Image 1: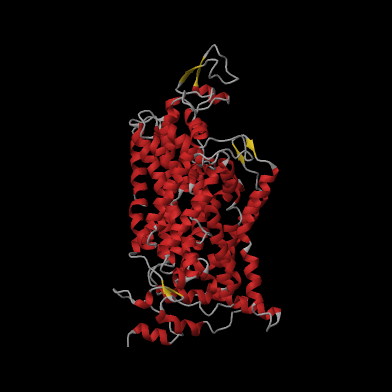
Image 2: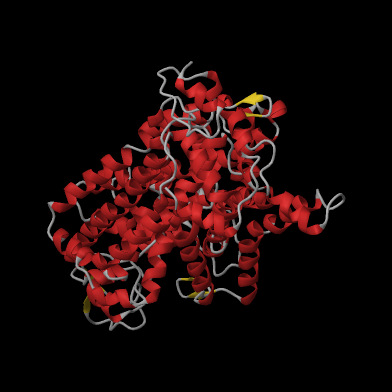
Length: 625
């Protein structure tokens, strides 16, 4: 009898990995009566996850956060939190979904009382998708405009420009375009305008504010729809639909372009920039450490948050992708490689960004600190200005925005797939063969919901949503994930499940991180973030008081499934049991919590018959090899 059959028959013997060149039918995840797809190749999964983890936060936010918080010194807390918080949480989400072949919502049959974590992640993704997709529409519009003979964000005198627009290194002031604080009789260098903090606007800033967004006076002034952006938004959803038309099968093919092309373009921009004067000055500004910053607790908080959000944890996307993996494919190794790839890209993108900013600062004669920005300001104002200083500016601008589009598409693939998978898994009999219609319907719905962000008041709504929506839920979800799996389900059972799947039990180090270190860090950062939270602003515009009420409402909505499902899980047993017994039963794994591979289900069922260990016994299991 083959050795793995013996292992299955005796749960007391450690499970060994089945080495097989041919994927058996039992290895395919199933949900209800419908057999789920799997990734065609392991590389498809890896590239999809690289594309998901390497998002716009890596390219547009990390460089600014790093330079502001000590440069090279910031990498110390950043890499530390990556290893002790980011990687363990990423592994936890991925492993339980790969083991069970269940996505974010249904995987919580491992602990039914916490099923609200899965549904909350789906709700969070549903709320974020319509506004986050603007990050795809904007690059499409810039790509079209980059094909002009003269880049429109490099000149004043266009229909959208104001009298405050100033272009070029030396600008002759006149009564038509002079800021209020400038003497009209002098020729004022643009650098001096920036130094003095006057009201001058650059052409790139006015193109972004008044042409791309057509920004209104405030959040209460919705204005008209910017149809050029709405059209680009529709085009982005057409691209997403075509890439996801066959689920992970088609997405796994698309990522060979969308995940790899950004690296090629990033390297090309970096090499071209290094040939320009000022590039090394920018890089030195980025990497030279300021160790005194490490004494500031806010630096450590921002390092943890940057790791956490750049990996996209707590949204259900990582687990959804892992649920399509074959049962015996490596999990711990994959998660380690993916976290390294994601944050390694963050560090490299910082080198590229500050090389570009160094060239820009050298050209216009200002300190590098004066041209540093973050988020949309970096991607759609500073970068276009900087790339316009290079030879062949149309080419480099087009390639840069193509890179942003590819990165945005990769991030959105799993965002769309989270809801589609949740619906198909929930209703496999009715929707299992209609995935294409579900995907198309969801893309169309997101497009219509996203039109509100294409209005003149849309930028204020975008900022409000972006500021609040992911402020609470992901940190809370991931903290509870660690508690539910390592303390309620139990470290010993979790370790056996991993051994059954990958041939080796969890090491004591990983168990210690998941049980003690990671949840403590996440809860601490959660509390400190709440204590230091500030109201959002948009430039100099301050939101009215009612806007913060709306923002906090959206922040709380994804948390509502937690108490609702806790009440439902306990309520199922209250008619026949005492409240204490009902809670105990609600914490036990459901009947459908089992390995995705059918050959291991009998042995797993026997393992599940043991009682939940005491806290003391669980602590001993955590430290045991």
